[in-house]
Image 1 (cartoon, rainbow, N blue to C red):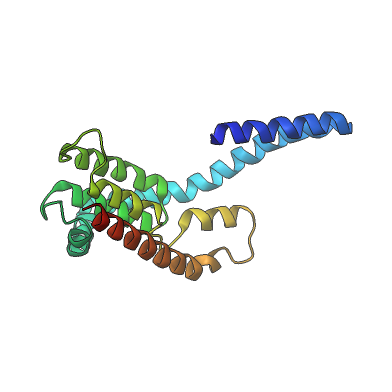
Image 2 (cartoon, rainbow, N blue to C red):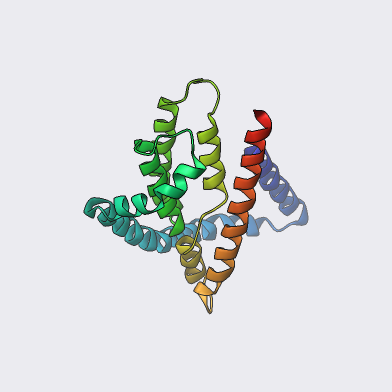
Length: 192
């Protein structure tokens, strides 16, 4: 559906530009947007590679496991169907840690491993389990304390104060996580 929307927006823009007689704008934008996109990717890559490297060091040194053990009691309350020592909780904790740093791209591998691990213990392979749904809600709601990707974008676009969004980001993630997990909890109870 999103592909259709993007296609329609692009098609309407091109048709409007052709009828308004500003064909040179299309050529300029095609050439300039490619260069701007490349520069943005390079700027974003610097921050992403740095934080992914730090996260990999934290994983290899055992710091990520220690953090996972620190939040495991909370996760075991959010995911009562998963045993405390199951590897799924470790993957979920690693995903949450990466998301807290605002590293969605670094969190993705842990999220995929968590979902795969949750699918292994799922009794009905054709339907998402309660734990899978709760993890998806937790992941979707944000759990971002330091939005490094957004700060990098703001820095790349020459923001006067790129890190000024940290407080609002923390507030947004708190409220969205509470709302999403509360809604998930009540839907799960209603289902039973």
